[in-house]
Every structure is written in C-alpha cells, then in structure tokens.
Amino acid sequence: MEINKITVLREGVNSTFQDLGRGNLYHIGLPFSGAMDKRNYLIANKLVGNKYNEAVIEFAYQGPLIKIENGNINFAITGNIKFSIKKNGKLINGDCYKTYYLSKNDEIDIISTNNSVYGYFAVSGGFDLKKNFGSFSTTVRANVGANNGNKISKNENFFIKDFENKNINKNLKYTNSKIEYIRILKGTNFDYFLEKSIKELTSREFLVSKLSDRMGMRLQGPKIQNLKETNIRSEGLIKGVIQVPADGNPIIMLSDHGTIGGYPKIAVVISADYDRLIQIPSGKKIKFKLIELKEAEKLFKLFQMETENLLNQI
Image 1 (tube, rainbow, N blue to C red):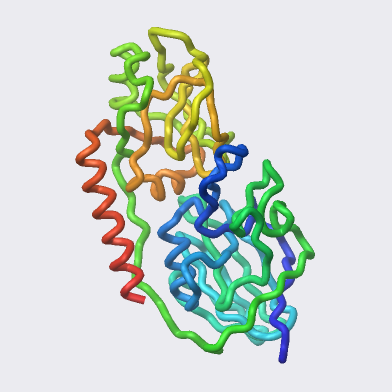
Image 2: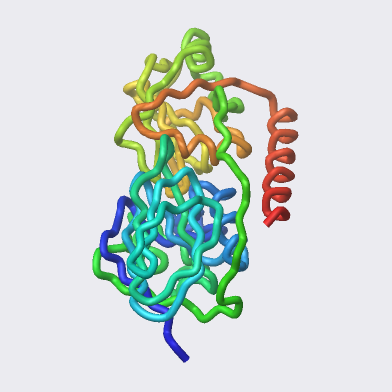
C-alpha cells in the first residue's frame, strides 16, 4: 500500500493542527482551544468526507506551501483564501469550498487570506496524528496537542491516513458573511463601569490591534473606565468575554484564552457572532451592539440551523 505523505516547504503564519477542541480541563489550566472559525472548520472536513472532529491545518493570514511527497491526497481549503495549485507541472488558481485531487510532486501554495484572518486545509482520511488530552488541537503556549504542541514548521513531513474515495468531487457555493457590528451581552461586572464608558462601548468604533492572537483580541479606542477596582479577584473566563484592564483598552478572550482572569468583565460576545469576530483582521474596526439574552439565544439557534443547512448541501 502506498503511503500518503506531504512535506511543508513553507510553514506560513501560526499554522497549527486543530479540531473541535478539548473540554472539561479548565481545572488544570487548559483552555478549550480548537478551530477559531468553527463553521469553516466543519465545512472543510465535510467537503473531503471526514468525520467532523478530524484534525485540519489552521493558518492565519498566510498558509503553508505544501508538496505531495508520496501517494495521493484529496483536499479542500475553506475561508476567504487566495491559493494556487501546481498539478503535473501546471499552475492553476484554486477555489475555496471545492475539493481537489493531487498526486506525487504536486504542490499547494496557500498565499494569503483576503480581508480576513483564518483559513482551513483539510485532507480526506485526516492527518495521522496522536491526540493529547483527548484532542488534536494545538495550544502552543502550553505545548499541548498534536505535533508535540508546536506550530507546523518548514521541512516537516506529515502522513495522511488512507482513504477510500480516491477522487471526491464536491463543492459548496458559500460566501463568508460580513456584519455591521458584533453583538454582545452584559458581562458579570457590567455595573462596575461608568455609564459614559458603556455608551462609548456600544456607539464608538474600536481598532483591532496587531498584538491580537489565538489567545485574545486587543482593541484600541475610547478608554473604558470603571467605578470600582481595575483588578478583581481572579475568576473563571469563557471564550468571547471582554475584559478591561487598567489602561482601559478592552481585550476579547479567544479560543486559547487563560482559564482565569482578574480584570473586570464588561461584556461577552454572543456565540452566533464569534466566527465572524475572529475573522476581523488587525487594523480594521469593530462596533458593538448590546442585546438581551433571549435575542442571543434565538440568534444562536439560527446560526446553528444555517450551519447545518450548509453542511447538508455538500
């Protein structure tokens, strides 16, 4: 049996293996982690015929340059991504949300994201990796996950599990949606903050800082001031919560966030808007809209239905 193997000729930016994440480990300091954009992650695996929790390569801004070292692969790329394929020596432009079949010496060059941050590269059968704490997801700060908890590096080789359907031909007509604002709920320390600051949070724009990463999105804009202490007793954090440190610049906790934090929490991003939040690149601006819990629940159900409908179209 021919072994399917790829070689990384260029690692790209923050390229890691991710799946749906790991739960129930906050008590030992491990966050949920997992794919930042869950919808695009699920679509990638469905396109190549995988189970939904198979490992994929997630990248930010620029993806890896990959060569098929041996065997064959089916692959798909999701997100808003510019990439090219060298097949039998000929260069072609690739389309997202479409499967491709490549053979030995063919290459995939994931050039850049287009006005977005994250993209996903999935292969039929999945990568031959070992789980760590029940998940393939890589949490680099903790050195936990597939690939010994490290980012993918140049000249690394990865094996791909054998797959039955040797030439899947699937595609999906899908455009990543843009929204005018990110919707939020009141945080546990909402009443710590000045009324003026709460108004500014929901009426002014905030710039996404270049210091943002998988752990948190740092924002710059009007200073959010509070009435009480800028530091509180440390307590548990969740993905999407907005903390405000002493400098008044909000930080949104993302998938690799610390499990506890000691800054007041003014708000939390609703689950239905999280995938779109993390695709806002540094240098772009965000506006927030405060909504009630009942509306957030309805929006989440609608988001889940839309995701299921997309997956059923494949």
